[in-house]
Image (cartoon, rainbow, N blue to C red):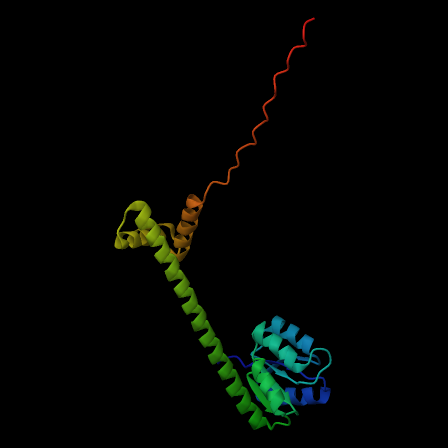
Length: 217
């Protein structure tokens, strides 16, 4: 059985926060923290890594949208805005700030469950896509490193492209080092060998004029 979703609630109205907590817990979810301002919401998300945070907009200190922007970036927790304010400008701002869902109070328990399931599923899809993009970026970087290292080996050891690649493979296996890391080491060594000497010649001493003997009377 999979673990229940874990949520943080950020709302400065205690009665509203308590009601939302009761609704979520009645659905089998875990509420791991309830806070009343945006800064505490940021701290709890960093400390507890919940599946999502429910955020009101109007709160003391950092408001809900400012906190949502920070949470969406660091630590990357999905943010669900739950507010009584449905002004289009607020919704547009929430989208720009990385909010995953925008819900209006009050919500029935069935509506809340549907919104939660959709929001968490959507957040996980986005996370998976981001991980795929990061993997592709890393793969492209590694390929570029290997290509550069191959070129260096081909030049310095007079190898064909195939021979240089096989040498990289063998060295990677023998040393138990990833090929990209080995390639990076080869590139750094090559740059060091090719860099001009930084030694500075010692300054020359000025020539002293010979001391002439005093005239003899």
